[in-house]
Length: 186
Image (cartoon, rainbow, N blue to C red):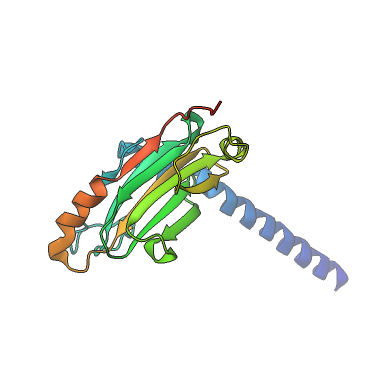
């Protein structure tokens, strides 16, 4: 009886180990990642508006068809990234994602920001220089620190009516997004 229980326990442990290894390696075996899909949009240092989701059409990203989406890809190794623009007076949100598609920061206009988006994204070294006042940044910029250098930004707008969608897309297209080198203050 004890021998049977030991074999059973060994089988369960081995099954658990195999299960964990398979789950952890499956994402590495995929040929196309979220990052690959974002790179295909050619959104490096600029906002690209995603096309509206048509009813009944394929929606592989599970996007909400009522929202307007903009994507921007940045690399903090090139310098800090900045997003700036005036968005419509309706719900909007901004989220930063790392290469694995994990949200690293998110905010909405309901956080007291209002219509003006003025966001600076810095890596740890750039934040350190900023804290030591060795970098000049405009007053009022919301500073966000990222552990990762390669990020993509998703901006979402919620037009109150579909008739306003085109106007919201135009406003989103006017948002500036990208990295820029900063001058060290003397």
